[in-house]
Length: 306
Image 1 (cartoon, rainbow, N blue to C red):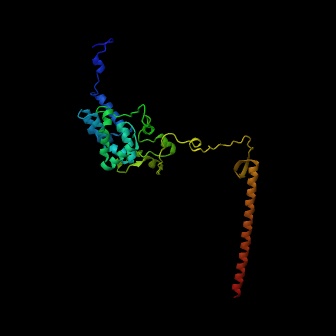
Image 2 (image 1 turned 120 degrees about the horizontal axis):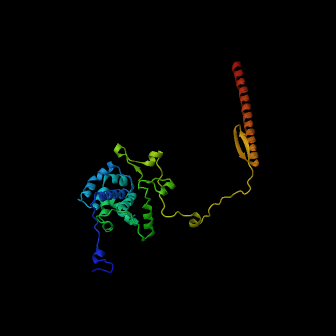
Image 3 (image 1 turned 90 degrees about the vertical axis):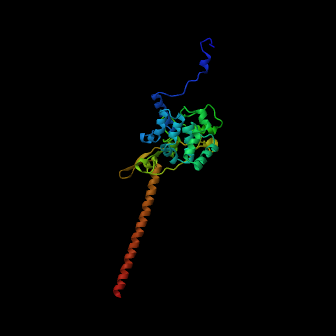
């Protein structure tokens, strides 16, 4: 059956194959897997070696792309970067982002995965994403996971979580977020791995600034405005339209200040008061010394008489 433009029914129902056969194509796919699963962070060759078996099996056609993703996510490098150095809630958020391409939909979903980590461990947590119906429907066996920004969301909280986890192309899941830079906090996942030197991993901020920064929770959505949301009027700045002229005065030899006449007069009055008080104190000290000297002389005379 051929239509007016020569399009057959076979053309309309044809589905292209998703198999990847070329070496260059598989190089690109492997690069995309490492980039997605590790949140755009750079992975050294020594760290990639932990998942070389899974990568080699995928290149040889012995396992599917889904199993290659599983091998990378179960590697010791991923565990050190996104599990051991993170709190459970942060680890679950990153697992959702790296393996399902979205943020957690609800607190209930987040809590379920945190409980799975506590009860069943790291491997069961990773497998729960890759073996899920959602992963099978979204990516199947032949597609690399990716960030899935949908057109609409069921709740505003779901959209906020997605926006919070999404980042700019030049950033990684190890770098500071924009909000964290503004409020002076560090991402708990911004960790420098020193395992190769036999030293425990440390926060980069601790090494750079030699102190432990305070971790402050980041509020979702737009921060409140005090004049609208709380009802407190915002402070206004009063500007002097006709400010009094200031003159340069030498306060002490070699030190000058710009003061108004009134400020200079007040300063002179305070200085004279201080000098007067100092003079009284010095006079009292001198009188006390004179009295002490007289008493010492009397005591000495009495001692000589005895």
